[in-house]
Image 1 (cartoon, rainbow, N blue to C red):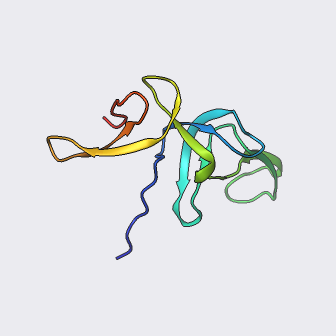
Image 2: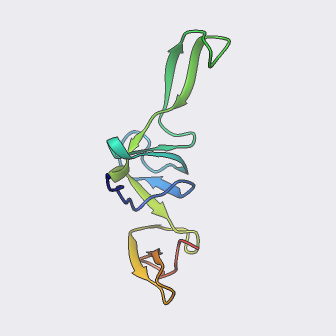
Length: 110
């Protein structure tokens, strides 16, 4: 059985892009691609795809959609202090492993 990779970013997190052409912009993570260490962020890194009509879409044409961004270029935005932060891990009294903000020391996962 393969072990799953653990990332500092999860689906539905709000992240800030710290490198690349989208640097300084933020958005919500829609999906994580573990095999390539990438994440798809809402409304960021938009590319045009030339799609042929088929079973998925009745009408073809040029569609704009999000392309993956490498996870190392993303930084979590803390919901409490609203700053980009590094992520730490700690184990609570009830033996749950949670992420926490290294700046304000608040638990991110609840």
